[in-house]
Image 1 (cartoon, helix red, strand yellow):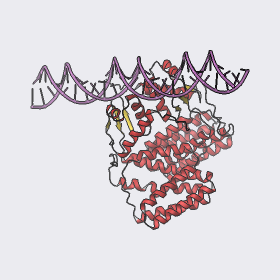
Image 2 (image 1 turned 90 degrees about the vertical axis):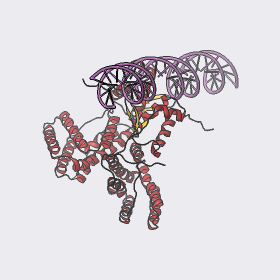
Image 3 (image 1 turned 45 degrees about the horizontal axis):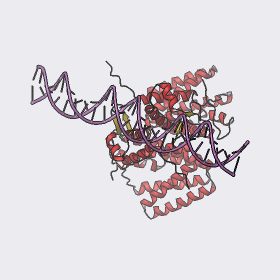
Image 4 (image 1 turned 180 degrees about the vertical axis):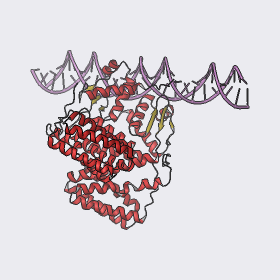
Length: 227
Length: 227
DNA sequence: CAAATGAATATTGAATGCATAATATTTTTT
DNA sequence: AAAAAATATTATGCATTCAATATTCATTTG
């Protein structure tokens, strides 16, 4: 019998609201009516208000005193700043991973890399992205730094709702793939400085933002996904 | 007539509790009794509980469902991890600062540097540290990346309460000062890569942790300041 | 006498209620 | 009729209340 730990209601509510924001069901800048959401979820205002405070700390909601809550607006600058930060964190994760990773985990990542290379050659962008993400997650996990992981995931969450125009040109893609070749080489010899540098400068950490920056003015809010 | 924006009570309470934790009046691992704190501050449980959720997001408090709140314990590993992270962030701040900083602000930092050099020569550790901090803050400000600033300050807050044995040996101090000479040189020519590298590897971002690590076991909790 | 059970107590989690600030509406005035 | 003032309405912030969970202490049982 597994002992079921009853989760608090405010965490449940936070999850639900987070989803609404992620999916774009709550638009950026949109006022969040406590009453509406309470009725929607069938809870009282207390846990909802607590949930909102959690979401504020995650950068998804802003709270104006006596004036309620709004879905945080994302500007191009904020997204760019966030990506710069994430690139630095990826760099650190690479450095640390080289210090801490086991030979087995290196093996695993190498296999992922080979998979990715195959998808690259087959021009399978979807699968390429999927494996690509797995590789970066594996490196982050290998860094053995929970604070880093927490921060990275938080940042990642914040910009998740932006709809990128992920048009990967052949040239970009080739360079990204080359970065990955270099990464694997550095990882194999556990060259932390090198891996860190590659990850900090890795295309994928800049590309998408660049494609946004071309589209929208600097402090304009961004469009988000809307399912 | 300046329209005074009434701050919310929970923010006020969060500030007060944060102070208590910082000062060590609430010991790490200590259970936080809602009732006690409510009486202490003369507020009801609602704003207190909201304040606690803010502090959870800042990493100062942990919340156990149905079992109340505790002051977050700091382990040596957590502090080390946090410092690794802060070093990476400082590195990024340097990189970005080189891109964005004005000539005037470079001048200002150079003057601060000269002041610090004087204090170094006079072996005035206190003043040295003070100016040192100002320099790092100036670079962070010049990075023009609010997300970065917010995160750095948050991390800084988390480890503020650790009591370090800041015994600066002459050799360490000389090397730290040399780092700073190199920083200024890089900043003057706006060599972001160089400044970033120096800051990531800067002694001050490692030193204090090292001195802790020598003292206390890896996952043991740390002693904190107690005024 | 130690471990286990059960009642009593205390504490947390969530709902409700009330006071105040903000917003929308109506009324007044020019 | 437009702008300003006054009123009504709504929503937020906080206190209080109620319910559920955890903890403590006494009692029972092996």
